[in-house]
Length: 94
Image (cartoon, rainbow, N blue to C red; front, side, top):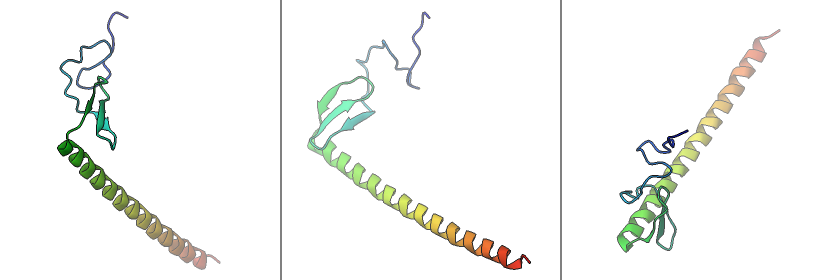
């Protein structure tokens, strides 16, 4: 095996030089410390970046709550519909 496989779709993989990494895939904590998943570079975010990250987290949490509510309503509706259908079928059987 002479060639190392690529790990990412954009061509980054093991043994690559990460000097030109754009640091797009990173994790940030509430203190403002960010770490790039791709190259491991760590940095402190500016107050603007922290505010943007907090807003992003708030929007994501709202989306999660909407999805959970949608799934709950769908399950509730399907559950009631299933009960109604099966009750009608059972009522028709001799």
